[in-house]
Image (tube, rainbow, N blue to C red; front, side, top):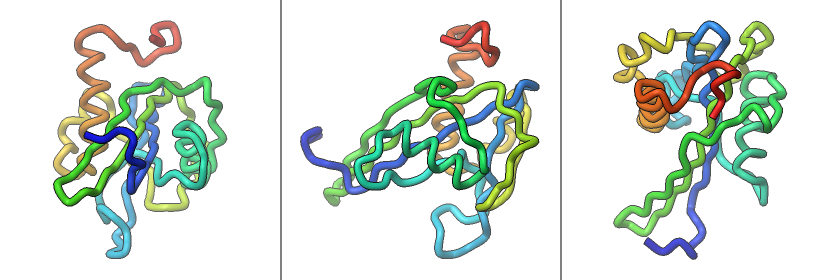
Length: 155
């Protein structure tokens, strides 16, 4: 893979968890002009201009929920880079934000989908594949004890 080649698409997103250990996700609109219509995903989107991954993720969350999160609330989960056989290269950087209060959400795209951490696997078939991947990484770290969802255990 040629890491010097700029990606065709770069995205960033945030998986949010409230203080009751519920994932706060986005049920995407049922519109044919968007990717993954009707599916469940994290809040996020495409990078604009020269913004950083963190700036992109925070801007997208603000646009999609009205929440103004601080960068210090974000923990990096994973950065990915995929180069397809057709020469298309995609990058994605995904974060976890804990103890988010959903009462202030004003979801402008789709709707809020709340699911307990312990039950998230039941919804994987209805989720955007990238969201399944990122949540699976978070859940694996929880099982192995490497990550907790409270402030005291923030890695």
